[in-house]
Length: 329
Image (cartoon, rainbow, N blue to C red; front, side):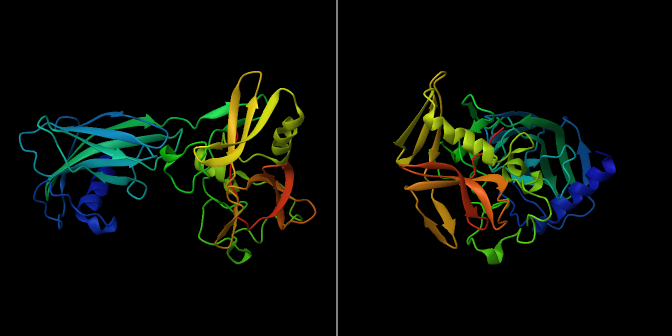
């Protein structure tokens, strides 16, 4: 980053707190009307130390202040961009600093398998901001299981939010309309984002990466299963190399699929599906989107549907309905 760009970034960051809706932690006196601050970069005064406790969706950022006076506000800039642009960076303030000048912030809502960049800072006065070097770290990848099929299956459903470390194989996850990349409070045709797309006549019968929530949330190596992927999985019910068991896992019912040749297993919780504001068939059945549109009626797309008795890998559901998402790679 050029020094001119950094000067502009830090002037906006530390003189216009209201842009972020932040409040200054009581770590020392600080004039919020700072103008024309002097920026002294480098590791002489502030050090960005290695990131620790990295998981799928969280990490601990560490910094150290090496100066006689520790009055000021300390924290970190965090971004998935190495340039730490202001509009992309998260501002994370630390409330404590120890006798050795070290401070940390536990940050959550990170994405799996993603490289992030962080930089420690100390704002000592209204005209003096000191920053450390930029360090990078990569979060742990989303765990997957090889069932001996054409794709590998994620071990968890896609969550509604960004707290990946709260996910377990038995969690229902979020509900997504077909082709939408976020959850919402109501699932109706009236608020369905893709009403005018994927209408059959445009030749688009499979979700593109920008409309595939697994790709958007996890990167290009991940996607929704196709209709054929779900059919291949459901066909293993008749294969002696596989065992399907309807069971309870952590209080959640669903299907456990075990590849007997390796012992690898995947659990699909019965999360039901959501229409308007109501969740139907929770704990009784499941509906998991594919990326494949119905060729005959573009109001429908294929999904895996199951209950405790049957499994259908080519079930058709209205696209506006909220269903579960299980990524594959």
